[in-house]
Image (cartoon, rainbow over all chains, first blue to last red; front, side, top):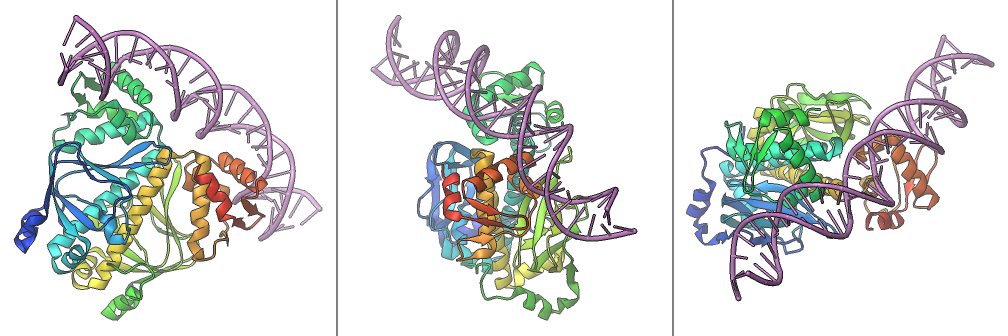
Length: 218
Length: 218
DNA sequence: ACGGAGCTGTGCTGGATTGAACAGTCAGCG
DNA sequence: CGCTGACTGTTCAATCCAGCACAGCTCCGT
């Protein structure tokens, strides 16, 4: 099966050794990598940092549809022939990536098996997550969705560690991930705190996974 | 760029010529292809027919998360290492497919460029659709979501034809696609009919795309 | 110290949605 | 014919939620 994100293949080193060193791009926290509507002709391969993918509706509402980290690709839509970006990508911390033009990307997918394995693994993971998010949205109330989002965020950096502190993230941003309003997020956040499911002081947020999981599973 | 679904490459013929003729599987309408929880070790490549992918929640609610047709793959989760199916796949009409074991699938992705191009194109398309569905769910009311679903269904078989009749599909099934209840679907369906956006008699449903589009776009 | 920007804590209201119930229609069938 | 099952048409009370408004708090730069 294709290697997972944590596999030993260093695609960045590979791409650089292939003479692509100049296409490294760097972004500071909050920089916009590309915006909805920009021309779409490169795929980015994330090396370090973190990136949020969001979509804005005609009515101006914004939704965060993904958070990506090292080893992920973004802007894959270019490969499908989308002439413009359908989403906006923003770095949420200092980030470096490799920009691979569409043509070259297609060539690499053919010629480098480990590279295409990684790309396919990325697509499969992203797919599974999108589907899970959609199902969550279809089935659950915003209270449960918030609980699930918190659990996923806590797991993100963690690995084995069950308890985890979150990167600073405003209630507004949480609302955009969960698909609800800030006042709702605030309400449930306080409710969870009162119940001892989370701990939550100023600039950080600690989750008690086993307790929060109860909220999610009915 | 990778060929689209409508490309000229006939992957079915290719797979058969590669000595895989015996792995053709056929299903009658309403047959279950695989169920949530089944062991997951093959990927299916759809040749003819149509398949619905659904997920059931702990509380017994069911959601239809995709409708696939010829040229699509299903059960890709096996490639990502999921030991069991996360979804249920049901044929909605007579359907034939090729069952490719995971190991062989990985081999083909390496050795056959046109084949891997098709697979990647499928994943990109599926991804874009999932993301669009998620955004739709996040932004829009169930009335707009129903309108959008009807438009997509009408476009499905159509191609150039703007007006289109739907395959028989119960209000219950529509509710599972839209993510709401049957009574809501019934309510809006009648509303659309009264307004002349759809025509709708017993065993078929005709959509007026330009009028319905007004509902979707505010 | 002052003012402002960006967050969080709260409460309220009206509209949107769910969930369940019940009657009516139609087709297939013994 | 009379029944059963699978749908659709309709209604209604209980809830959920979005949208707003407003106050308090903290970190900034001036």
